[in-house]
Image (tube, rainbow, N blue to C red):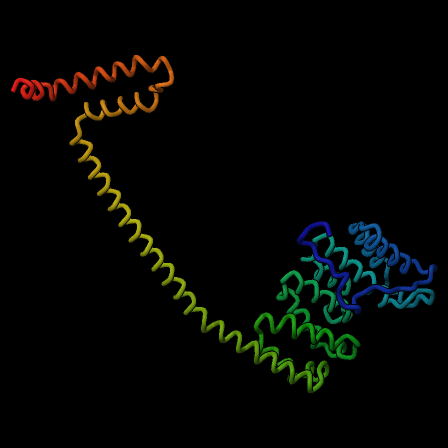
Length: 308
């Protein structure tokens, strides 16, 4: 693969595989072998596509009557299958159906194994709607009902296109039509009806539960928003009250006392280490400051008591 979005169908159904044991004298078969070599061995997908297109161009009306070559339809189908794989590897899967129609001209003329390959490709990339009308036209072509892969195409159409897309009414109509009678046995049609009933129940349950779930999610999100708003409001109120009380207390404290307390803490915790000689002057100054404060505040009291 060249990118993560490219599609490979190498592991698909065996009906879409290319198996040729071609005689070397056939030039068209040699082109098929060269295209397969480019695709599977050399991984040159563009060269494989170019080889397939040249081989398809060389297939003319006279190629059907050449006795040394394989059948015209088999060679054309082989080149188309390799070309589809090359387009998928080149991440050009969107143009696969138009490219196939360009080779065959009409939808009804496409072989069953190529229709199967296209269904698997577009289902794998999630584009089922692209194949819906094409496969429906192919199935309702009376000439295709005799092909060996008709039942497989009908099964893929029912299981991978109609039911997943929710077209259960059309699926039931298909089972009761000529297509369903030719493609499926009675037991298979009964199992298909049960599958449609299960799908209808799932669709009804999902349609009934979706409004309630949406309303419940909206209510839950609204309640969560209300709770978070209330918590934020209460936190803001507490913070405002705390700041108000702190501001009142700060205003009531004298700036001189705050400055003196900060200086004492600075001297005691930062600058004063009694083990250092440089701390002695600071200790003496602090002792003198404290002594002076003590004498100023309590000196008259002690003097009066000593005189008495």
